[in-house]
Image 1 (cartoon, helix red, strand yellow):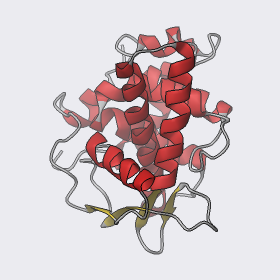
Image 2 (image 1 turned 135 degrees about the vertical axis):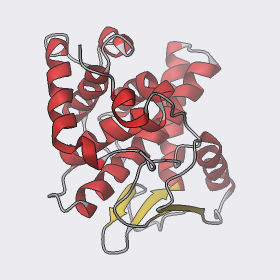
Image 3 (image 1 turned 180 degrees about the horizontal axis):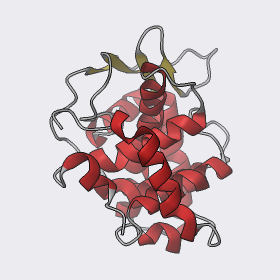
Length: 237
C-alpha cells in the first residue's frame, strides 16, 4: 500500500497554521470597500495563505483590491516572484459557494468549510505555479495542479476532502479566474484521493472523481510524487 503524502513530506505532524516557510511573506493591502474588507478578513482568518513548504527563492503573497480593468483572479508573476490574490475573487467564490449551500439547505459549517477550502485551493494552485517556474519546469495549469495536490495535503490535510468538493462546485463558474475547468478539477481530485484512498474516500464517494477513474488514482498520484515530490517538501525536512 502506498504511503500517504503526509508521511512522505511531514513525518505525520503538519497542520494548517504551522511555522510558515521562511521564504514566504504575506501582506494584505488596505481594501477599498466594505465588501472587499469582508473578503480581506475572510481570507486572513481562513489561514489559507499560510504554508510551510520550502521554496527555492523568496516569494511574496499579496492580497489586494484589483483594478476594474483586470479580471478579479489569482496570479503568479515569476519576474516579480509574487502571488496576487484579489479580494474580488475571494468575495465571488464565497458568494457562489454560499449560494450552492443555500440551495442544498446545507448548514453554516458546511458552507464555511467549503469556502475556506476553496481559498486554500486557489492559493495552492498559484503556489504550484511558483514551484513550477522556480524549479525551472515548463509552466502550465496542469503542472501547478500537480504541485497543489502535494502541497495542500501537506499544509492542511483536514481540508483535503472539502477542497476537492469546493473545486468541483466552482468548476465551470464564470468569474472564478485562477482555476481551470471541470476536467482539470477531476484530475486534481483524483490526485488528492490517490494520496490516501482510505483517508480521503469521501472524494470518490462524492463523485468528484469519475467512478471509472477512481481505481487508477493511486497510480496517478504515485507518478506525480515520483516526478516532483522532492520539490514540494516542508521546510526543515
